[in-house]
Length: 286
Image 1: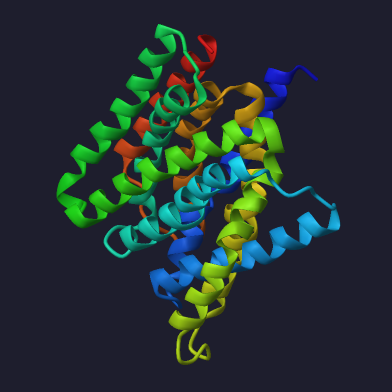
Image 2 (image 1 turned 90 degrees about the horizontal axis):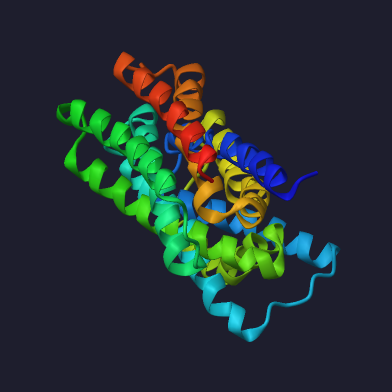
């Protein structure tokens, strides 16, 4: 299979998996506070990652790889999950999805800064247009979006974009699933300690839907999704394949409506239609 096509297909699978993250996080917050949820999902995923690395006898990363792995861990293991979980205390999962449309621009920007990529001018035009659609919808619903939720989601987007770009760059050397696995293992001791310090007094009151949400964000959002995503970014280009994230709000809105029965405004649906057009345009100039 052509390397670029393989990268785009892996990217689509990663986006599909990530699309369930916000609805699953919202469900998990019904039984866990944001900090415990963040460290618990990282600890569970870290245990699975360690088992995979040992099972496949993966070589330890070099010393110079530890700092980039730390950046990945801070961005996607701790930063984005915690900030987005805190944001979901102020906004619902459907509202949070539209901010995820800014991730491609953040990822592309860090791809230029950290990965040395130089996309075509037409690419930036469609990337900017897609982001403008996101910003337009956010402003349209500004009265419904508390400032705290908006600020937390924007901060989450920045740290996530950095983690994506840094992980994709490192994936060219270590491999996609190895990067996220090592990043989770690097963070594992701190996450286990944080779990112990922040564990709820009792788990008897936690509903089944919250356990299901925790299971999803641990196994899929924190580990399996990155296996495909980092491979896609490494093969197809950080900036170009990163534009597939523009589709994530559409997939996420569908998940929010189907799973959480949240209302999806028509303006959000119209924006996601325009975003699909922008993804196609960005791919044209990839």
